[in-house]
Image (cartoon, rainbow, N blue to C red):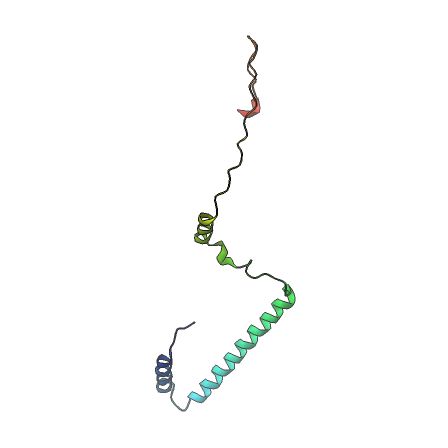
Amino acid sequence: MFSINGGELIVLLLIAVIVIGPERLPEYSRQLRAWIIKGRDLLRDGRETLEREVGGDVDWEKLDPRQYDPRTIVREALYEPASKPAPVARPAASVPLAAGTPAPFDEDAT
């Protein structure tokens, strides 16, 4: 998440000891521990509430918003096998009008 390796963590701890000071460091470490425990409990309670409200039979992969990424949609469409095109509807054969008969006119179409 933070991409911190061991060496960087040691440097950050040394800086914290220097900035905070050894006399206040135990108090801050207790506060950090309390925040971590509170955050862990909030996540656990949230997960339990979600499972209780929604149930265990939810397919979370179907609800993943990353599936609606336009790049993914285009990529999947490009790799789909070509399907047979739908047949084109042909108009019915036209019947010639008798001489002197006006052509049909639809007032709603104009």
